[in-house]
Length: 265
Length: 320
Image 1: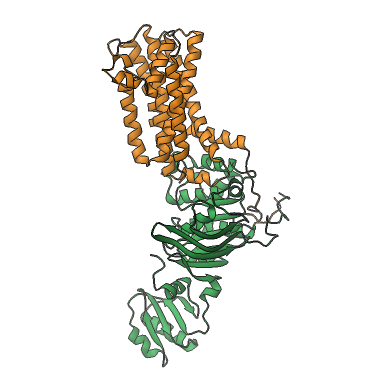
Image 2 (image 1 turned 60 degrees about the vertical axis):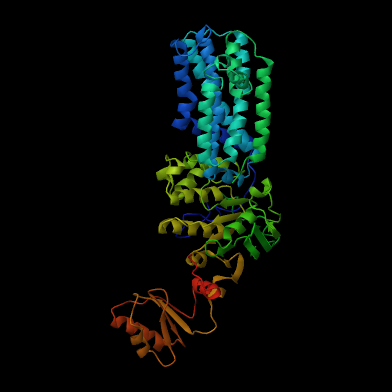
């Protein structure tokens, strides 16, 4: 370094000579996605929600016959249930809470003042979410194999399609909630909704076993559509068109609303 | 790094100001936060917006950054209208907001790397972390950092992309004296390297120490503007100020001062002597202090501090 350092300063002359420019989009996306993924895996409460609870439920539903009435092979149905739960945990609850608190800590404002385009900020968040979803599918699928699950090609294909659609629907809802509401309210709403949908939203207890009209309503929720669809395909069926439509509509409506309401301050 | 020397600061050639604000008005409902404000900031210069909390400093800066809509007036930042914060403009400026600006669980280096990735030619983030004294907290999550550490990270994020223009909103508000000194050095280096710096502060020493131009604002209006020297100069030496122990006996002082001089104590321990100030007056004051076993400190003759200027103009304490 030929530049001189003036006495008394740690900054050599020329250190800050302006040389601005927009960085490569691919690199922005890669670094942002990596950061999101690392943070999602570092956060122990999020891991409890996205991995530990689904795993415990997979083992419990498979081995404890008295818990919920499930068709045989139980492990197939249980895998469908916990994959649906995992998508709700990651896409909705975890995503909404993380976004709510990131906003409170001024992250969005910080990113908005760099050259990163706004669509790329959202893409990076979804990238981090996708990485967690991959980990969940691998871990839950692996444990299901140990519990006796025998996967078939068609079932796996349909299940992956539904996982993607479910993650998108819940992810859009998570961005909608976390992007517009105060962080402490997000925390409450995201946890309460998770809890309610888990028990009466068609995830743990199948729609058919819910009392009266609740079963019909649940089919219109992303939780009901995803869980029913996943159990169906893992037990050897094909997804109902209505389940796919419900997930796509939730993705489109919540995604559109989130794009309009996401606050950058 | 031979390429750096001799590289002219971008767009300084044209002589166009980095920031030009004319008759800026910002209203929120009934409240007028900024009321007809003008300022000019040139490349390689530091402009301090000085004023009490709530004077409209942050609002002005946020309009210049493109994050806040203006009600009326014209604003040009690096030659373009900043409204809506266009991407190409954001790449050329660095922003240090008043607080926050990271994931709650992120580590210092991860955050800085993310911001650096948005720029084409960022500074070395490892070096920046080290030089700003952030290595000791490298493994802590952001929300566990002290206010000063968070502020230094925010400053690093503002300069890492080698911007032409940097906005620093209260850059030293929660720093200790060492941290403040480091930030001052950094601001001086930015200036020396041709970067335009717009900073807000309610600390008059900070404005006096760093700024080429000071714009004093209150209630959203410019109450005075100029270099620190221009603002603090008085025509003749008719006033002397000093600090000493509070509650000293002024009758005793008036007894030894020449005819036509008066002495007053403003805030406790801050004394003013009015009248023609000559060596005899200075000697009388020093002797008066010595008799009471006190050392006169921060003696200023004929020059007001920016705080005096502010008090004279608004009748209010600067640090409100």
